Every structure is written in C-alpha cells, then in structure tokens.
Length: 101
Image (cartoon, rainbow, N blue to C red; front, side):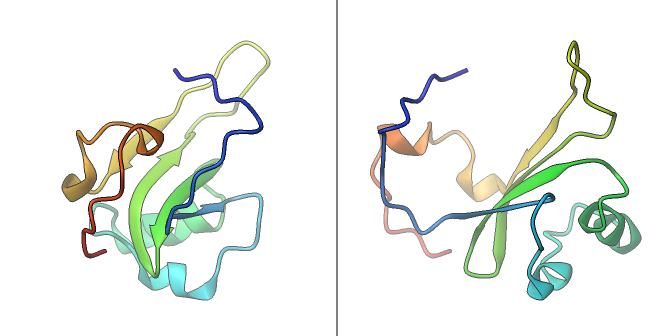
C-alpha cells in the first residue's frame, strides 16, 4: 500500500476508466483476452461489481474489479496487469521507458 499526498502529480499517457463513470464505447472491443466475451460485457455493464481499468489509447493495461459487495468492514478486489507491464514498480518511482503501448 502506498500513501500518496494529494499534491503529488506526474504526467502519464495512462488514463483510468471506472465503473462509476460512462465507459467509452471503444472499451467494449478492448477485451485484453483474459475475459470471455460475455463476461467482459457483464463487467462493463456493472453486473460483476465495481471496476477500474488503466488504458493507453484504446489498449487495456490493467484491470481491478470487486466481485462481491463492498461493506464498511470488507472488500475483495482482483487485479490483472498486461504481462508486458508487470514487475516494473509503481509509475511514480520510475520514468516511462518509451515502450510502445
């Protein structure tokens, strides 16, 4: 867990899409391949619980979703990261490496 001060800023090509906002239409076709098509649409429709995804352009880099109801005492979250972006440390501790997204 990291504590980030509200004043911390860094520039990144990564955008965050969330289930409590309007998902862009292109996201329906951006299944990274680890979800069955029906599951992916159910996720985006909010039927599988809240979610957030990190995207660059129209490519999904990471997904976090909570498959069970969150309460004031408990929450469960599953996280998936595109294998090309794993084990690189948090983005505020490293420069972007000019990788093609």
